[in-house]
Amino acid sequence: MNTRTNLLDFDLDGLAAFCEQLGEKRFRATQLFRWIHQRGASDFSAMSDLAKSLREKLPGIAEVRALPVVAEHVSADGTVKWLFDVGGGDAVETVFIPEDDRGTLCISSQAGCAVNCRFCSTGHQGFSRNLTTAEITGQLWYAEHALRKRLGTSERVVSNVVMMGMGEPLQNYSALVPSLRTMLDDHAYGMSRRRVTVSTSGVVPMIDRLSQDCPVALAVSLHAPIDTLRDNLVPLNRKYPIAELLDACKRYLEFAPRDFITFEYCMLDGVNDLPEHADRLIALVREHGGGAGLSCKFNLIPFNPFPASGLTRSPRERVVAFAKRLSDAGIVTTVRKTRGDDIDAACGQLAGDVKDRTRVEDRIARQRRIPLVPVSAFVTRES
Ligand code: SF4
Image (cartoon, rainbow, N blue to C red; front, side, top):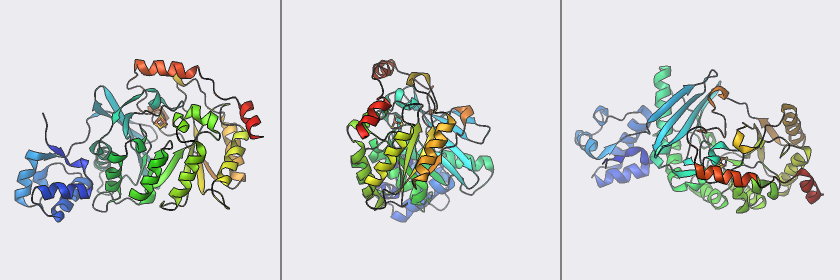
């Protein structure tokens, strides 16, 4: 049995505490941290400026180990997807999306997800377990250094991180925060808080905690403008309804590194993509932000259909009309480009074919018997 401590499990304070137990000063932890994260080193004997005694001690008690890679796919548009083995027949995915002015890494926080959003293939797989800090940080560590090697550069390749892969990051809070701190640490990846985004389906108490513990950019998966519809699309809404969620967003803005919240909105044909839905969103934003309205941007996401969802993608012209309606009301609105389509790397498709569980299929079958709220009900309620 492997009893060595995986040093990817620590932020700098954690590593300092580990080193202190070995009788080592904090500056030794800083050296070690830089070797691991800035240089991608895992061989302690190569860490030339560490004290020889520490270099000799570490291999017996510690290691630097990312998850095993099951598969790697490179898309025609340069998107790279890695599938990592997390044991028990499960896998998680990490996706690198290169653009002209940045390189974004989409990281998973859980194997599967318990929230079970109706439009999300990860949710349909069910929940297996939380990832450890080492498993979350290890996705960045592996991707950054593998990409540097491939590109033959010592420059940083990953400039942005989005916690938008498999899982609800705020339901794995204690493992998430040390990972975020490592991303931000100048002795590791030195990312700006504005370039690290946590995406949540709306775990209200944890949004408040994040604002105090490690405020980074926040994206909220909204997907519906009324509770009856959102209850069905994002079941967590039954616990934290839209009004509570938007109030939490408003509080978060006092501490956020960006002066807006990003709302993700998956466009579902005939379900949430009509002019009435856009108008209700506009009203919500105005109601929850005081005089000027809640400072936010909308990111409209073309749905990636999969058979178990029973949903289809909104036609392009409806997405454009929806975006225009929000924009005309003064809300900055973008439509997400679909990247990596040829490798199934788009949002909600991560690890969709890795594992399907019988109990989840049962649950989906039950859920599909619950009809979505018809738009007519919505209009009556709002008028
Ligand atoms: S959209 Fe996010 S929160 Fe919802 S089921 Fe998928 S991974 Fe979980």
